[in-house]
Image (cartoon, rainbow, N blue to C red; front, side, top):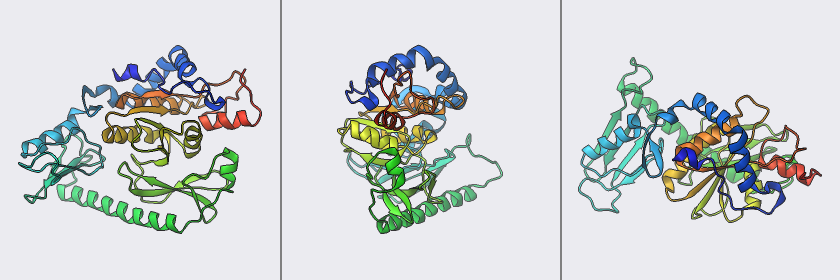
Length: 349
């Protein structure tokens, strides 16, 4: 079961001190002290995860009220639908009567699950499907819904284009105060008007928006861009069989330095972990996914662990979390915090 899978950390034993003994110490700590509490937090924050059908397609637990219903509609149109769906992602597959390998069939499930579009370019099929259980307001007409989704798609395209232009004009810099404070390399970051600028991409590698990090570590995104299910590619090949998903850029850089043979992706914040994990599992159904959780020990319900656990439950992934020395300050919450503390004189007890 997916629930059991999230109880074991799959990162092989690590010798480097910043994330020492993740596989053994994190597992025993998670099971022994905090799993039940955080499971209850997951149930409270993400109740729909525990209502998902346990039949899997492409490694993801599916919801009959959305994905499977949409797939059935596509199948009834005469096409062979894909094995999985990622809301908001355009997917292609064989058209009506076409052989395997043909790409004239297409579909997209709207991110808010209100409906989707599907069709077949070879036969000029172009249809909308509406999920009557999820339409937010009965007063909204179908034409209004269509206009809303088309407006959102057009806005995302414009912001993506602007993001590429800004990033192309930005300069390379390794002297930003944020990089020094976090003791990380510049990686994919560039300098734009005094702020670090990072490209945010979707699962197909297309830039969707930008994240800006100021000198005082404040983070903002390019307004109007697509963030849900998108991430920063920290490093590693997309052909890797092991994929590590964490929250922030600095944490990702720390993990990448320790695990250079892995694909490392930063989901931007804890709320996006689930959406990135689903997108990754959809694209790479056979990959081993590890959610590198923040341990927000001082925050109610520990949102870092709660969100990581939800992501792991949804896509059959494993969880790794920092293993704290006894004298580590409670203010430390992620792998980068721990690495910096150790480099600055902190010690393992």
